[in-house]
Image: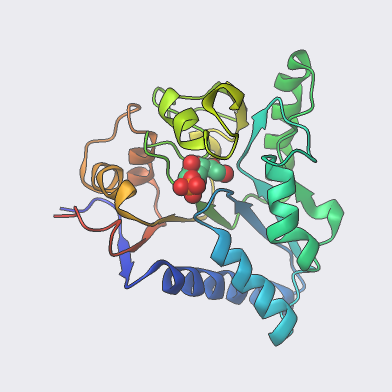
Length: 251
Ligand code: F6R
């Protein structure tokens, strides 16, 4: 009764190796054609080993990422890039400082903007994605609220890059990173569900028993803004790539 294709691996490490190799294949194929490859990237604990494997492929197997352009899904707002919890810092530490993606090819929502600048900035982000031909592969994690990016419950299929108020459950899940929920920003800039659905291929990764329930709802439930990840059911080329614990409640 699944409404989205999914693959289950024995553990998260195997998921990460498979996904990194799929990304590397497309990057190489595009390079051979003299073309760039546009990746939509996620942060958080889920993609860490995908990035680690891309770094390994770069350092040990000669994979060049010089033709890669990246657009990250989201960033807390406000957020300074050098802050411990910044997604800019996360991406630099896990990927960008360790591979050969040209710095000018890297795009991440800007947590340093004045609030009145945000709407224009978000429109430009959308326009820049379009001008580069759209996202080839979008990597996603999923929050326990059913968020993709930071599209919390209530986000519709037409939503675009914008400022959003984080759900309380999302702030609870981030509390340990911020040494207390009171330090977790109340808002974030995120690509919209509509932005994500425009990607040519979407790979949603989920690991661990904490994700099992939301994975079941996302794959088997009705499409609803209450669980924004259910909207992936309407995308022509989405795959969920799961470890056994995250797949445990699938029927
Ligand atoms: C992060 C993002 C979020 C996370 C989700 C899961 O850029 O867009 O949707 O993917 O909150 O986070 P982890 O992987 O830490 O469980």
